[in-house]
Structures are given as structure tokens and as C-alpha cells.
Length: 137
Image 1 (tube, rainbow, N blue to C red):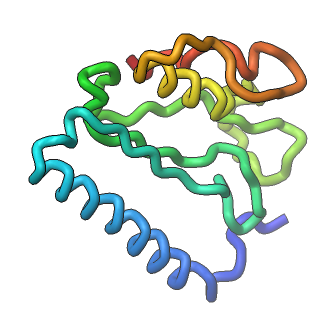
Image 2 (cartoon, helix red, strand yellow):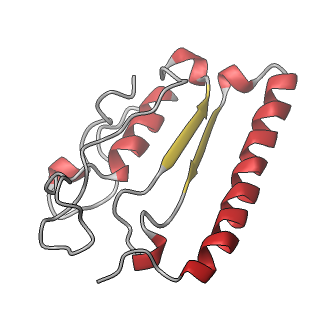
């Protein structure tokens, strides 16, 4: 199974992603100019981790702003690969599946803004919905 998709779609997807994230950058610049970026959280994500396969695994997510110092910004967190060995699109060196759902990011965001929750959403097991994302703070 080829995981590269149709090469004819790469350039339009790159243009779309560039356009979308340039809008996020412009928003950040405007918020910074107004002096409120450090009090803000911008959440930008994709609905696909691998668009060629329409896969929702390993979706890139950007958190930007200061959140009043609640999150340490200016770095990249790379979580363990979410890659079941039964899928052909996984590389030999990829880690086996270890669920780290977006629910943890959303719990972290809610807690950063003072909402007293420790779970968000529904999943087959509570460990996928409970607790903040480790390493975000």
C-alpha cells in the first residue's frame, strides 16, 4: 500500500496549509501588537495526520500564545508514535500504538483557563479521556 497519495495533490495541499497557518501567524502578530498575545491561547490543528490515507492518527496540533504562563511555549512536543503494527503505512521503526488522544490536550486547555475538569469527551476506556497532556506544562 502506497502511503504517499497522489503527487498531483501535494502542491495544492502545501498551498492550503501555508495559507491557513499564515492566517494563524497574522492573528498572532495582531494580538502581539495589541499586547494580549501572552494572555491568549490559539489552538490550530488538522483533521488528518496522513491526508493521503485519510488517517486521523498522529494529527499535528499547534498551541500558541502565552496562556498567562500556564504552558511553556516555544518548543515542540513529539509524543510516542500512534502506529499499530498491523497498519501497512507504519515504518519499521515506528512505535506500537500507545493512545494519546486529543482529549488530553483539551483537558489541559480547560484547566489552564481555570475550569475544574479532569476528563473530556468519550472514548472506549477512561485513560483516553482522563487527565491533562503530560509534558505540556
